[in-house]
Image (tube, rainbow, N blue to C red; front, side, top):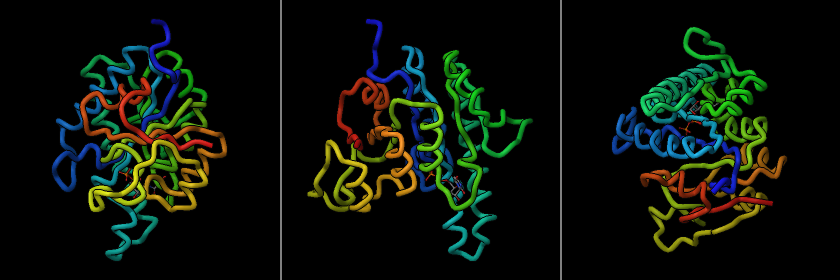
Length: 239
Ligand code: UDP
């Protein structure tokens, strides 16, 4: 079959939490490798994949500010945390012989390329997995917003958001087992109901370009490839 996936080019948002494994912070190399294996399987079958990585497993500006740190300084530290995760993910992908490039929103050229949109597109056309790090490069934003921003810039067909549960629920199903689960939601619903899937800035940006958001559970091996094929359980946020 020529067209294996219903999407040609996608952006996968990998939160810091997804790389944390069973701990409450830090990086679990086994988790990183599991996520990398999933991404590698999609890339090997010709799916064009770019990634935005979070940093919440290492540092969050908001949490630091709650303990008295300057918010902006904390946010810069948070953005650097995403670079640590990006380098670990890059290495895990390279060990699986997947060509990758890390591009940072804050210049640090001894470590990674600076983000240049047209160059990122070229990398993707050549089949490389591009990892976008350092968020948007601005404090007061999140990596979810960075994900929607880069997905729009890369003209992705969808934004995949890997979470801890298999879609969007009316309430956190880990605390409310009877919470309703949605197969599909509109951007407006996601915004109006203030669902904790993605922040409003990210949903608004996606809506701007009618970029579908696919929320799925990234914790099962092969979950990303399955969601990419349109199989398994997930929630689509669309017009
Ligand atoms: N951050 C930021 N600007 C951005 C993206 C991230 O200031 O454009 C900072 C912010 O402090 C955030 C931290 O980086 O708390 C880690 O990112 P995030 O919390 O989005 O990571 P995730 O929850 O996905 O692990």
